[in-house]
Image 1 (cartoon, rainbow, N blue to C red):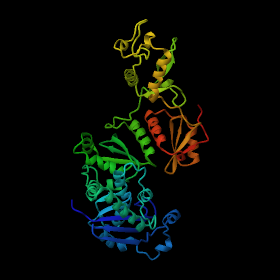
Image 2: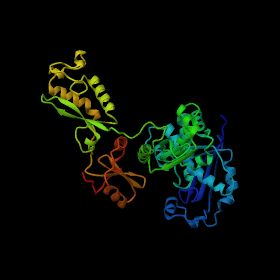
Image 3: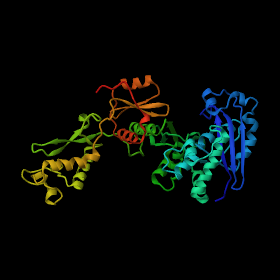
Image 4: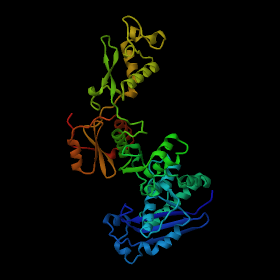
Length: 464
């Protein structure tokens, strides 16, 4: 592999929109595998700097008085970046600002790009977070000035050294190659569309001809995930079908992973994209409950959607998208734990005769009284334990913190995302939304892994 020099880049800006906001500082740390050089400049953005940005970076308008504007140092910066691999943390952010700044001067900046967030995720998958503060703390990196361009760029160089010590130069160069290799874009998709796409949490939609979507997906790194579809199009049938048909791409950014998962689930059910097979709407939602017969043996009884009150009902098991799936799951459980399919309603029992499974020695005889009701019921409840539907563990509605707002949830029903108390009240005052099995599973998985500090009890509860 030909070694191109690495340019570790960091910028400070007046905001997060590369088309509207401007660069206030830029630093480039270059490593050509023998020599390390540093280049940094303050830049007069020509626009106001919000006060919270000033507090974050320490860069004030007074500091930029007399600093050059971007066009005055464009040629110098071009020279610093030309022929190098552009390495940054959340690289698409820095790259998009620099590309936009050059474009305003009618200069078409292009460079192979590598992201240290992605590199950290690949090399340290057990690490919970991969933001710059986490890398500094986890790897003992030395930061001279956080949220200043040279301080942050130098941290990226230090992180590269850590990776090289842990995994070796060859492995690291292979990761670089994987990140910087170009995907072959479909003929109707322009590179500018990909360049404009953020590498953040969100949901993307591929469209073919007309208004009906081909495919909807979610990702924590939108741009990277979309490109991966086209990188795999030569070897995977589904990706090839997408690449051949896609004419247009849309995306929606979300506050985080939970928002992306929920939005993806809702959009697939609403728009029914032709290439999505999962997360389709369940039309026969059902679950099992238990009821004792006159002899005291627990028997399974199926409850249909109209009979369910998920989150409040005790002794619900399963939650299935169809009756067929519910019966198959129960049959598998009976076979695995030697339970009676007759008592479970999966086989018709004749009076005084055992079930067929007992004749094969696969049932311990509860159907004809050979196993006591107490012992059988204990084994049944133990076997069903993993399938038990959890009742709502909170007194009322809760808010799950993500980004600048809260996901509002009550008794496993998802009400929406709110950024203010008024929005929370509005969501909770509306009629209760339909129960969604996929969102229930998403919420359960998310609540298991987040800290309690991200959960907030909401004062107004929904009527039962």
